[in-house]
Image 1: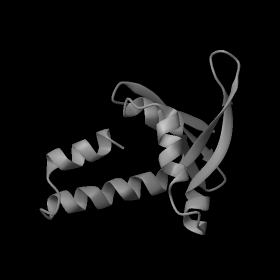
Image 2: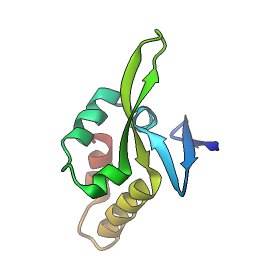
Image 3: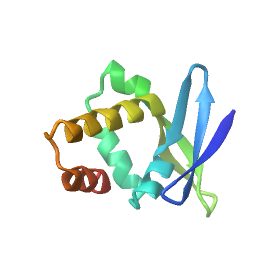
Image 4: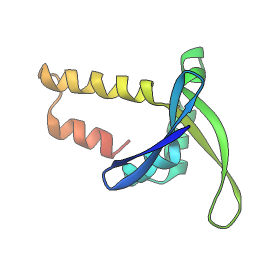
Length: 107
């Protein structure tokens, strides 16, 4: 099952697999106006531990030219938790709004 949600004018697909909900590195890249290969590079730079294995799953997709390309399914619970932690830092004065927005935009 999947649902579309509009974020920053981009249709982001959320797919339910078992008891988790995922979106793709393609959608994350589109929302933040980044190239997907840059998002993938950041994911690959993360520690290769059990936590990341559960929240980032390597998959493939067919691009507009019909070529098979890599991407990742990202657990939305992880993304939401990360967002909540950043907003808490903002509320507690440990992070300015401009730094938070730049951090998200430059991710």
